[in-house]
Length: 243
Image 1 (cartoon, rainbow, N blue to C red):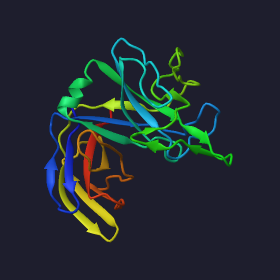
Image 2 (cartoon, one colour):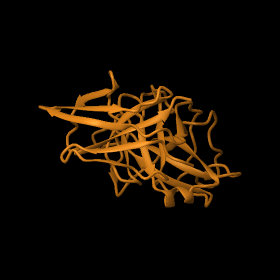
Image 3 (cartoon, helix red, strand yellow):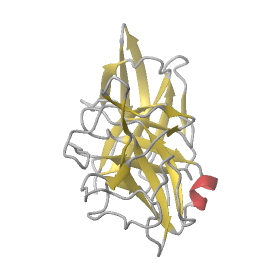
Image 4 (cartoon, one colour):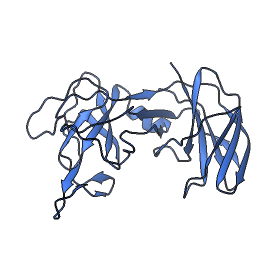
């Protein structure tokens, strides 16, 4: 697996630096509207899980505390990403060493149901602590038409779910950031060497092994303009192939 080309910039220092060329980039999202098994709309802050399964094996399910059951599965990440009824485009970068650990398998995306009922009878989401929800009721595959089979205490998909996809992309020419402007609460990034075969996203900067939803920013004449996110100090411009 190879990465898409990535350019890194620092808003504070205005410094530019490319990411390692042997990193791997995963992107995933769902078009929405995503629904629970009872037909209700997914709550904001609900969790999605990205799971790696070894070639030749079937996904074995999760425990109620969000751990994989089968030795042939790995929970790559689980995060409270749901917003406006869907999983927004989210990017996960893996360095070369981490990517090699995932050779010989495939990635799938799952929507979790972590709803609980509080003492006052209101529906809420289970607390998210130490990188995982404290309770998983059920899950549905976001990349497969069918549900995982039930067996031995596994939490399976309650109903078939057809949502989004997980992409592993090959390298394209690295875009180049030519300028950055911070004006009041807005940031403008100008980029050249963008390919017509790729779609580009602006993602809050992160190191390999971390992830972040892409910002709502589109290129207009080679420039991205967007409100500066709270707490974000640097960003990446990422290109992924359209096909």
